Picture: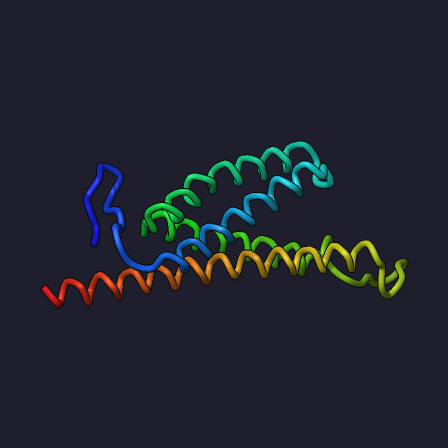
Length: 150
């Protein structure tokens, strides 16, 4: 059941665990950005950018937790996939490579650790996108079946 508001339709019934899991994973992504920004390994301007990204994602997390808003789920899915693309590019670029050619050892430990961290972040982002996209599909399927019953 949905009730209209000025911000769009709000879910009043339906799945609970799936939206909660999606919101928790989205919040974990926000906290990861804050943790990485606080560590200060990426410089001041990238740190500020990560704090800004986390601040933008918090309202969506709240909307998903409380109401499972489709617009918030779409935004989370798109941002998570964009972050996957960015982090994959970093992983495949020189900064995240687990090996070097000419002048460096075959396996340089800090670079390998950076690659492992990027893989974990990519996994978190993929999980976020998957949960959000499947929740959108589930909510749409549920609203279609409710409209056919009436």
